[in-house]
Length: 235
Length: 235
Image (cartoon, chains in turn blue, yellow):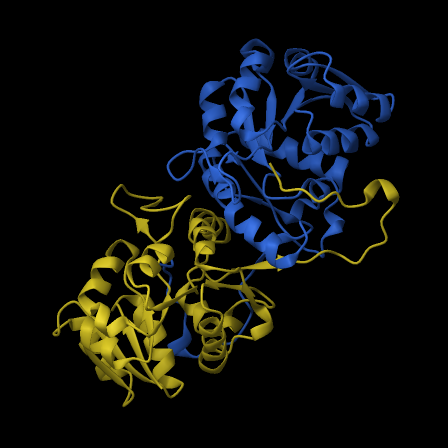
């Protein structure tokens, strides 16, 4: 299967490298054809790796990964071209983090919208699946770096596209499908993008980016009547 | 120890009830002295339970819990009165959720500010500790409802105040201090409040509010050189 990886940063290089090692043919796309990071990556990532423009990588891939900086994603996708994105499955790994005012970053879109939704609205003929954006890239491609089980959150409007992504993540990176939590339609990207401020604080407390969220389930416990659950949301 | 619980909703009643059962003297505060929910709670929660206005509860408590709706917290605290809040430890359990446009709710403040910070700025002589707001209230007062271990996030500017809260949560609710994760100063409330959209989606996927986040730590694994961690934030 051919995969287009958009973005030449550490996330794109890590995902692209892992996909190439797993046997996928990977073209890394960048803004300009002569991008030095993409060239170096393609030269070192084996015979399955190649590089091109955003448009060339998008045209090449049956599945695309958006690994561009969140603040640059929409312009990168515009360069990729709607005609090269139509009918494709796009895994959106980006977070709309704005570091321009220093640390901690803020989100350029949140609360009543998300980058995942913006991309899906801009490219309605593309099946956008938001996934992997709550993880450090080393953990994205090697979930065993973190003590298991732990959760991979996924969302998107197209159920079949999500199933394809789960199979890819299992085959290429070793994710256990039972650890993938489907949060519903693409608007759930608000949730997975808005967790970044907490993620960054937890990284500070853990002193490593190699952690992940596990959803601890209800305990199987005999409850006294006065302890019976009251279903409510926190406030 | 005397505790003032501000708010008569399910969160305030659950926390107040658990504190009273654990031997704390608890006054539940409400906007008006004759609040029916507060009266019913005080009548059923034993000899340690009483009720009053926000101001009376704030004056009564050595430690205060803000369990009001996030959209009403600042006006409730104004009614409590700065003179009754000064020098006190205030555990802020509230989330600034706006349900006025239906589900899912949005946050009235987020990204570059938080309710916890707003409260701390408004009452600089109060030690605000943000805690428990990432949990359903049944789990707040009974962490064993969820399969352990799982994390309680806490933040605030005053280190001693956080230590007092951790001891209270251990003694009153049974939290293991090792499961409490200190995320730093009160600005970390941005992170714990902004996790609510994800929390609500996870509740939908889990079909229960009785779950919690566990931070899964790095695995102790022998790594090949090409798998050595690259420290970076996700994007």
